[in-house]
Amino acid sequence: MKKWHAAEFESFQPNFNYPEFNKFSSHLQDLIRQMLVVNPTKRITVHDALNHSFFKENGFETIEPEQ
Image (cartoon, rainbow, N blue to C red; front, side, top):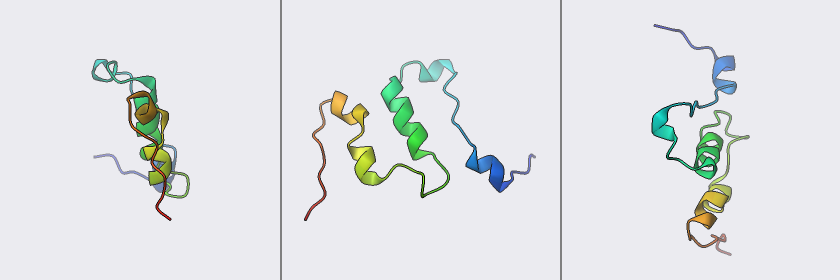
């Protein structure tokens, strides 16, 4: 079994070069990539994820934080 090192996780990029992912739009693939970033300081925030172009293009309204 392969042993993983922290540096390998930092540079992780999901691979969408499989036929199963061809049905996913480029916007959905982008959102998934941003959500899978290992470093939490670089990962997409919940607010930004909910306002991602994937949701906007699929008829969801923009989510604004409550005051």
